[in-house]
Length: 409
Image (tube, rainbow, N blue to C red; front, side, top):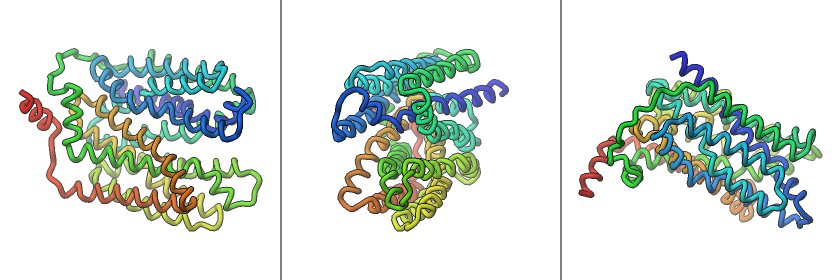
């Protein structure tokens, strides 16, 4: 018990460092690309989008693979490999000579961006089901905090010491996190049993697509991420429409942070509430209330109104990802829990990729206001999915796995 408390604290800190490192480049991505040659503004913006998305694309493909390896060999080795891999990728980014090298390194970083889903699976596996929501909600504070403060830290370091040293310092921080994990994390010995053939990758994938709850929870996760990411690239422009201040970047950062602060403040509360009242019920409630805080953002006339609504939205959205993760943890067989968490993370990364694309298309067609309508519609659709799911009979993942294996014989 003492070891698990120590493990949890270390993972929480490591999640903050890794999440911060993944987002610290956001404030100066375009500026850094501009230092690699004499480029037009359109060229820089196009490559900024590609380079930002590159990590999510490879991470989407690799997350289930890392999860499967962790199930077999243990979570601690994979977390260490991921940390060192991210550190090396970020360190080398400070020495690229052209945009193509930068893009390749971002792709490479995605290959080893399995730390957070692996760490979640590790904590989840050793957490009692009765408190999974509260524990995962608390754990999310690390990754959300990193995402929230990463851009701020990255921007401050870039201004203070330059781009190259910023990459180097970040790489050192992640290396320290890896060292702490090496000496501080205590993982129970993996009992190497011959894994039953029912847990083959092909069979697990088949079962996911035939398990109504798991498949739809993963789709709901994608809808949530699409909604969250659709407005992010447009937030600075929307803020500039609401204020005459010259400090648009700062005010956009405050507006962005408002949702994150609400998220951090209430993630643990929603997780604990869902442990007591049921994950499906609390998730459905949060989805429909999110709609009520998203739509009014399209009608604001003052910046403070937008900041206030973003904070309220952050409060209710803080429970969404921990609860979906707790649902997957509840339904997934212990033998493939890491792999299942990896697939769930892949659905999240898919939303991260599709969100900015959808936001850009909708905004160009109907204005930024229409993005909030679209996001509200996505959350409403997720609510309808959850409402219908609760009326369907339960399925057991192991039963599906066995049935499909017998059918193949």
